[in-house]
Every structure is written in structure tokens, then in C-alpha cells.
Amino acid sequence: MDVKSLLQNMCGTWEGECKTWFEPDVLADTSPIRGSIKTMFNDRFIRHEYAGFIQGKPRSGEETLVFNKVGEVFEVTWVDTFHMNYAILVSKGALNDGLISVVGQYDVGAGIPRWGWRTDYSMPDVDSLVITAYNVSPEGVEARAVEVIYQRMI
Image (cartoon, rainbow, N blue to C red; front, side, top):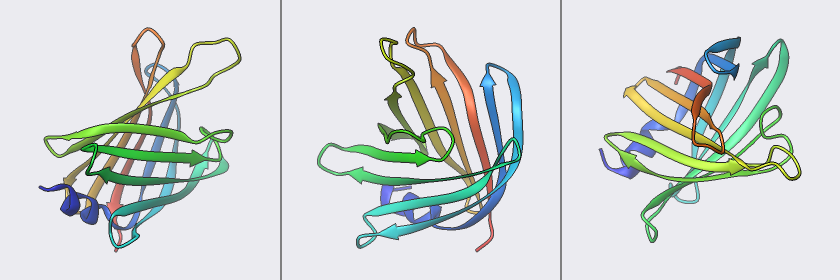
């Protein structure tokens, strides 16, 4: 599938489940989530807005995705009321076998090495969207952090 078709297929209204891990392999929360993905600026960008809960408290966020044709790379920005509530995460990556995979870095504290955040977007079928994010330690060790499993509503 070409990039434009993949991004357009992601558009719609979605509902599902969001799982969160704060420690490797220790599930901390499972909550319902609703999302909306729409095109922007003549279908060149898509915006993912979502709302749900984390440990019973409201959480919301937004991602913007674009395929940079000049650099031949996906670029994603992300803000969130829980995970990225103090900065904008900027990630870049590629499309491999239908999977968009982008990586960015975030600050954890003054004088502490930055951590990585890898996010994968996949569509197992036209009515399913899976967004999985991994924390990446400064040493390169990855651990699943968030997994959203959406089903298309519209």
C-alpha cells in the first residue's frame, strides 16, 4: 500500500482499549479510548485526537503525522495530558511492510540522558488500527509502554 492510501485508511472514528506499562512487562492500566483521525491541509497531513483514561483519570492527546516527501521520512508530533504534558515529542521514521515506525527522544530530568520513544502504527485490516509505543533507555533497551487497539466506528 502506498503512503497516501495508508494515511487515508487511518482516517475515521475509532474506539478501543489502551494498555499502559510503567515497568517492563508489568501492566499498570487498561482503559477505554476514543479517537478521531482526519486529514489536514489538502490530505497531506493527518491529525489523531484522542481521549480516554489512565488509572481512572481523564487523559487526552493529539498526534500529527506527515510523510515528508523531500526527506522520504515520516514525521510525527505528539502532545498528551499524561505522558507528554510538558513538551512536544517529535519523531521520525519509515514505512516497512505496512508498518509506520517512528522514534523520538524526550527529557526525563536535568542532567539525565534523554530516553527514546518508538511508536509503531499498523493496520491489520481496514477496520483495525494498532498503535504501540516503546520506551527506549539510553542504553537502547526497549520496553512496551502503551498499546492502543482501535476498531473503526465510522
